[in-house]
Length: 299
Image (cartoon, rainbow, N blue to C red):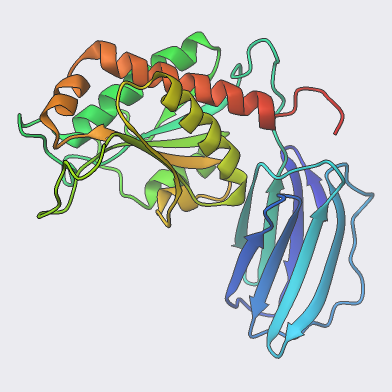
């Protein structure tokens, strides 16, 4: 285990590449890497001088062919994110990220926020009754949010830099890792399957998360939307969505409104409404940064 500029990295030496999975606990203070088709032969775990973030690394033969490596953080520390990957032929790395430093007065200052306007020309998403394309509504909301982030001193990053960019679903969370994002927000607008009664319940915005380290971000953004978004609240929900499975940083997906409801489609075409959504998003990001970021207080 070694220190890194963003946290710590645990290297697990293997004789060959095999399947593995990673699970963090709900408290966000421990991660378990399970390595399959493996038998442990480790005698020494080296911390190379210690870590201010990681407390200990332990391993055990959990079952025949399954080795579990547990990495526990120091008391009071919490994960901001993690990224597991092979480096070379058989060296497995688990990069653990600590919360970034946050300015209490300007909590988003210096943070790199990746905005992901969902869909693209070849897969434009839902279409409203008036012909509004979801990909365009998503992009417009992202642009409004990017302008506000700049005013907060943040660094907005867009997965789609123009309305005509083609970016695959897999490449969107990949960009967050490659471009050093601190948070990832995927922006969408909703539709319903054919045959579903759109008036069976109130329909509006929903916030989705996947990993435990993204729950606080989801809560903060959901609460901010609930206070300011002029459409019904469909809640904070867990879902197995590809972009929300991004593990390296806190990541959420927001369904801002319903493209197929004429009144909400009309709202999405109004700059003032998109501005309200963007302001709600920024308020949620600021609340999350203050809650989960490193503000200089000792844990």
